[in-house]
Structures are given as C-alpha cells and as structure tokens.
Length: 492
Ligand code: NAD
Image (cartoon, rainbow, N blue to C red):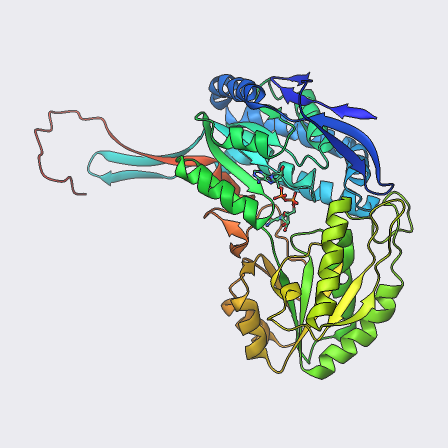
C-alpha cells in the first residue's frame, strides 16, 4: 500500500482529510490512497505558483527550453517507470502504456523549440518613422485537470507547453491513477524546473472547484467527460479565465465498398479494442456503406476479435487489459445490456462476469445498430464496437455530421475523390484517411469540434503556444523633431 502525496513548491506534501482509494484494475485490489486537496491546500499551491511566476516568466526562453530539454532526457530514461505506473493504476498493456508516454514526450520535444515559436512579428517603417512589433507573453498561473485514460500523456501535453511559455502550473490528475503526475513533477524538478513552477494537487471535484474559481488562476486546460468539460468551461469563462476543455467522443469510421477490407478490419479491431476502448480517439462506430461491406467486415473481424487475449497489462501476451474501475465495468456492461434491449444484434459477446478478480471486459461487437439507439448516441468508453449500415456515402457523411460528438473520424477507401469530399465536408476536428486513430503529431494541433471540445484553441503544436500566451503589439517611434498635436484617428 502506498500513499500519493501532493507536490507543492518543490516538496511532497501529505495532508489529512478525505481519503480516496487507488485500485489495481488487474487484480481489483486496493493498492494505495490519496488525500483530497481541500481549499486551503489549493490556496497554498496557487500561492506557490503565483510566487514562482515572476522569476520564471523572466528567464530567457532559451534557458527555459534547456531545462525542458533535460526534462525530455529524463523522461526517456524513466519511460519504463512511468509506463509501469500507467499499467499498475490504469490497466493498459505495457506496450500501449509506453507508446502513450512516448506521445507525451513528443510534445516535450516540440516545446524544446519554444523560443522559435514565441517569436513575434516585426514590421519596420509601418509608416513614416514608425515600427511595429508583436510579442507573445505568458498568462500566469495555469491549471490542468486530466482524465484517467492517459495519466502521463495528457499531463505532458499541457504543463511542459505552459511552462515553456513562461507560465507556472498546477496539475490535478485523475484520482483513479495519480502516481504518474507526481513522477512527472519530480522529474521536472530533477531537470532544473524551479520550485513552484509545477505543482500537483491530488483530489476530485472538491479540489477542481477550488482551483477553477481561484482568482489567481488565469487559464484552465481540462480533458475529461463532456458533462464535466462543459461545466468547467462555463465556470471558468464566467470568471474571465481562458479555458480549453476537451470532452467525450463517438468516433465513426466510414468504410467504403472500394476499401481494402483486410486493412480496414485490422485497423478497426486495433482502434476499437486497443486500451480496452478507453481512448477518446477510439473508433466506436463503423459506418458500413452497403450490406456487403458490413457482412465482409464482420467475417474478417470475427477471428481477429476472438483471438484477442484479455488479461493483466503487465503480461506480454495480453492484448486487452482491464477497465479502470469496477464502476466503469458496471457502466460498460449496462450499455451492452441496453444494446440488446434496444434490438441491436450482439454478434460477439466478450463479456466475462461476474468477475472475481480484476475488472476485465472482453470485446463486444454489435451489428444493425440504428442512430436512434442510445448505444449509438452515447459514449460507452469500453471495448464495444457498433456497426451501422447505410446505403451510400452521402448518408454516411450525414450520419457522422449529425452526431453531437465530433472528436475524431476516419474513412477507409481507395478513391481519392471520395476521401477529398470526406475531409473537406466532415464536421469533425481530427480526420483519418485509411488511418483509424488520427491523433495529430505533437507539432500539429489536437482538438475536437462540437460537444467534444469547449473553447477555441486546441492542444499542442502552434495551438498550444497560442493558448498559453497572449499577444501584445507595439507601435514605436523615436521622434527627432516635435510632431505636433494630432486629434484625429491616426492613419498609416
Ligand atoms: P471525468 O470527467 O470523470 O474526469 C476528468 C477530470 O475531471 C478528473 O481529474 C476528475 O477528477 C475531474 N472531475 C470529475 N468530475 C468532476 C466534476 N463534477 N467537477 C469537476 N471536476 C471533475 O473523465 P474521466 O472518466 O477521467 O475520463 C474519461 C473521459 O475523458 C471520456 O469521456 C473521454 O472521452 C474523455 N477524454 C477526452 C479526450 C479528448 O481529448 N477529447 C481525451 C481523453 C479523454
């Protein structure tokens, strides 16, 4: 049994009060605990971050980047330790956990070049004797609230970018798998990040409520379910804070009759059942264009799905680890029951239960799912794939575009013209062409549309720099002779 403390002003802080249990989902047993940060602890973290901001924001960007470069090196040296914490508390397979940490490190690598990204624009002689230039300045204390499903990657998408831009940061990781956040803060400190620049608060809604209403917090990055994302966006923006809040998803893969169906079947099985479906970019709906496509896909996917090994994430043969908690297992199970009640065909039922040890849930496949069904409309966030049959491309596109979620989508086709029509007209933030999980690379922006994202500025890439800075534009002149009084609007 271990306890995961807070991390404030460069020190681990253990507090008393309401305690939450940490489970190992592979065994179903309690392995640790944390104590929920109360308003006074939140205030201490905000004070530490606010105090550190003045010095940190004035350090030359290149010097900050050198520290982040050292942080990147340390992350690479500790990738296995981080992945083990992900496996232990989240349940992902080891390989998947390592890959997710690497996707986080990619963003740290990108922010090592922050000085170039922070460059402003300069126009000499914008008019006679006058120059104009712009600069991007940090905001102050920024907050990150992260979900359970990527306990290392999502924090790494947030705080390295924020601090590279000169901000200080308070991370509130998911209470279900809090250890990675602490490890990341300790590695940042070892890399030379000064005390108070990165702080970690353990807790749940109580902690978040204090953090997002603190007057010294300037910006909030949040990733989680749509209900929470929308609430945090509304509370934060009502208080004048900059907020980006990323919510849930129902990602459709459209499969055209001309697609390479073997390739599509492989891609869909990986994208639907990898990480037990607990990915915001998982494919959860296949839109089969034509009955032939649906029938062939089922024929090809069935042996692939039934071969998947369910087991503990640290066992090399495991393809699908457990779900994160017993409550989540119950939720996913209730959706499978609902799908059967709603009249969808449960072609493959991989459920196991009652589970004696561990929150394992095998792959399930529904066919003949209709858009009116709740298993189509709502995010299940488990290894459950729904097939919807449509007669043509126009109806496939219409289906994707009328769903309330719009995080990711993909099309499988060999025809460039169809792929072009899809990418141009689909109302979704991240799009794959024969790529099932189109998570953008670190130097591009990440973000969904509609009810998958609240806010205007995406995560990482140039979007991240924009989110964590604000623009200031200067007009300057150095008059040699008196200019006289000008009362009219100045013109150029
Ligand atoms: P969640 O909304 O339950 O929790 C996310 C974070 O918010 C946690 O830190 C949690 O402590 C906090 N929180 C929970 N309820 C709160 C409340 N009422 N008020 C204030 N804070 C609260 O989400 P989760 O279950 O941890 O993560 C899974 C969800 O995250 C899924 O819906 C998934 O699609 C989504 N997700 C989205 C993206 C994306 O980029 N769009 C990425 C990853 C995960």
